[in-house]
Length: 258
Image 1 (cartoon, rainbow, N blue to C red):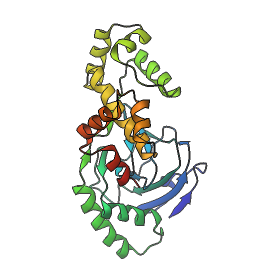
Image 2 (cartoon, rainbow, N blue to C red; image 1 turned 135 degrees about the horizontal axis):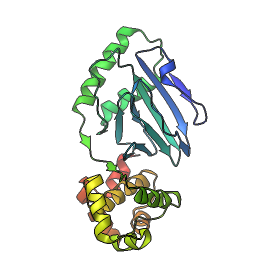
Image 3 (cartoon, rainbow, N blue to C red; image 1 turned 45 degrees about the vertical axis):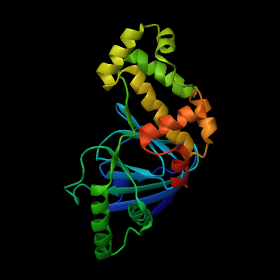
Image 4 (tube, rainbow, N blue to C red; image 1 turned 30 degrees about the vertical axis):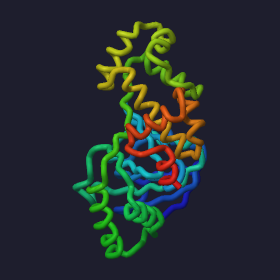
């Protein structure tokens, strides 16, 4: 195990082990786009991370983990203090590794397995590793896949506009206001979003609001503050929206992330 800091670079490919676990307490860190030959299981028992890939973004509250296959360019961002856990797997040692990105629910057993593997000594006897790994693979294979991803448009104008909103921490506007800001018709914007993300703008905006809400709630923001920041007409409207998309209330989600 390596307990690292957000400022200390770490390359798992330099470690000649089949499984490499690391742990860190990280605050306001941007890893930058990178990739490695080892596959990665990324998780935070406290705090919230967002991950950006080539054309997709996903959010990781403490109830979710991400599987990132070998060789995939990605960037991990922590905006507040995060208890970072990462476990890397050598594809040569595990030829049947999952080959697609996925975000999964983390139950109590999977959480404890990830925690143990993130902290285990790299020279742990192989027999003990194999016992834990067998249980880990079983739990990962049966974990519920969550749709906490957001495909990103490739149109240059939209990319620049979205990047500007993110840099200034601005709310994603309605379609009408977006059209005015971008200088294109509502029909054109919806057509581009539908073609490049599989969702019309309004549906994309709703998914964006959901992921932003999850991020804010995981960072311990009050429900009323999240509702206001994301421009819901009332707390009850936000609670209804959140329950519709996640199957639970914001307060229940907050309790699960503690």
